[in-house]
Image (cartoon, rainbow, N blue to C red; front, top):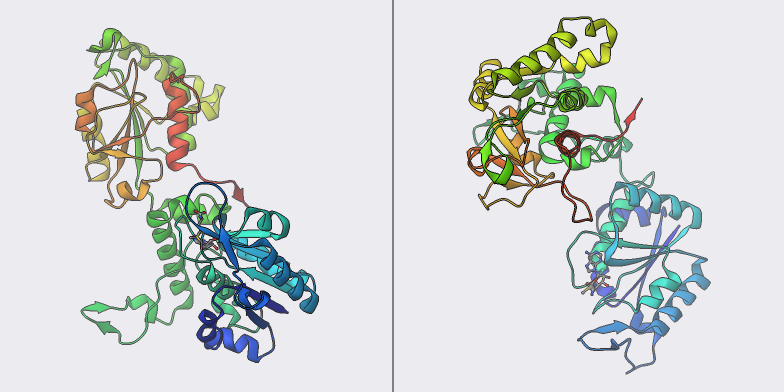
Length: 434
Ligand SMILES: C[S@@+](CC[C@H](N)C(=O)[O-])C[C@H]1O[C@@H](n2cnc3c(N)ncnc32)[C@H](O)[C@@H]1O
């Protein structure tokens, strides 16, 4: 199988290709790597680049030079799967590398075309590229290091290149979890000891410990990635252990009412039912309905009595399962005390808001779970009714989640809809696999 690299700076590849496993792959004739400079396809003293048309600085590699190079290489090694490099390309990750491995097998010839300067004339990519690859959302001076990264990622998946097949089978990003922590000698170094379990010789126990460590690190540091992956029931249960307990409070006090005055609001039975069901779906431990009004409390109590103790239990088991999470409470302080008593730790309060709120330095996004979870404290998501939580309540909370909105100027979701979206964005995972 051949890899041909067409580049401006072929000298960059010499140490890389003559070192370690990349060299071994060539020596074992698993792969033949051919590097050639674009300069060798032009007449002496001619340029391979030309200025971009239109305002703005920058040079591009000429399409005619690339054409010559591509045609020559394909004439020599056969039709190639051609990969260009650009920060705008498809991210180099497990999935894209697997696609490249498959194409490499299919074609037997992979052509890498890393650019320099401002890149390639767009027509060249349109004409030739089978794939455009990016190594991240930043701009490098050229595509050579991305090309080398691709070669390393690719070759270790080709049988015979890496010594032990096992070492590539269980690695970060091969399943929904990252790799487990590894240790070597000495057993104690700078006061840090290798955990006893790792040296216990009990393979089953070591496997369990490793899986747990991998799940913990993934949940706390790579949650967005983990939930973009298919996950089994068993892996989900493992990951769940490392997500701190979550609670939801629906505030009917400390909210803004007509004319944006602080006040109290009425309870809505639909909110109770639907937020209870969302809470049950996303693993919330309790859903607190917070109202200090005696009359309102009576309404909630009647509803809860029906579902939690009355004929509702048999009438609809699923609804009962959800509504049994609901707790009626008079104030947010009481909610906090209840959680603290149950968990032996004070909860962190995450406020939610639909309106642009003052800058308190508390803003977090739906990608910032690790910022909150790293404290290993229960989390209370605080939802407002009426015109939303008061500014003073938001200030009292530890964090403020960015508002939920779409590509329109309409910003009037019901609290039960917002709750479902917020819980899904914060705790939702991908489809399960069996
Ligand atoms: C200075 S960059 C051109 C960037 C281009 N003007 C843009 O903003 O999209 C020159 C070349 O470096 C390579 N390159 C730079 N950043 C890269 C990245 N993040 N991933 C892959 N290749 C990259 C590409 O081959 C690119 O054409």
